[in-house]
Length: 250
Ligand SMILES: O=C(CO)COP(=O)(O)O
Image (tube, rainbow, N blue to C red; front, top):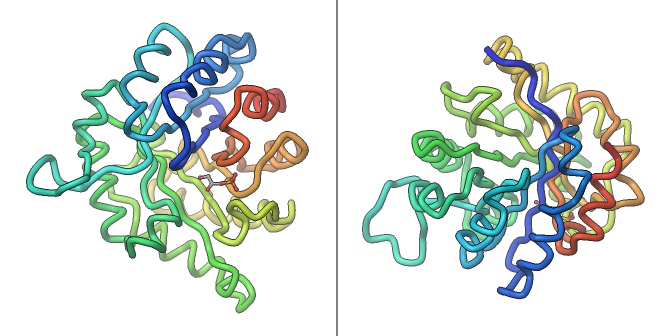
């Protein structure tokens, strides 16, 4: 077992970014902040940019990942890409089970789990997303939802090396609303205890990122909450300036 991994600031570009956006990737990759080695940095780009982004960052500390993968290795699945194809394109990470996919494509915990297994088999680090809806929170079911999502989405082979958890309250994504510091602390403490119950000391090594309207003005406070090991950033990861100002919290 290795040491506890460094914090991770991850960007999720979602369906944004054309070839011109590689300039932002290059600017992030060249920053002295990343060279400091205090944290790891990752941008998950659309599949169309995956290989070119990986090539322009190959000699830099910036990691490049994808935003989803199929759970099979190959076959007649029009429009999909496999974990092996992501690895072949030199991506190192893949986001799995983002709420935008869970909602729109009805991806459930069992599918998230088999995609995570596929990612691990291809040597990718899976960034597995969980989080409650507004209705689940207001009816007092947040911790139950997180417990079920963790139990159903993570395979037994998950370790601190191959798996990162992203806690993203669905109502905080793209809305400008963030969970309160007390709510973030409670959710992350709960996730940590569930991970340690199931994975023992590996549970302590799995990074737990917070996601949902993270930006420069709130990053410092959020990233210093206990058991918050980084952030998964949507809108504020699209420009080097915004992404790097979040990184400056470390
Ligand atoms: O969904 C997110 C990251 O995966 C969060 O998006 P925003 O940071 O735009 O709220």
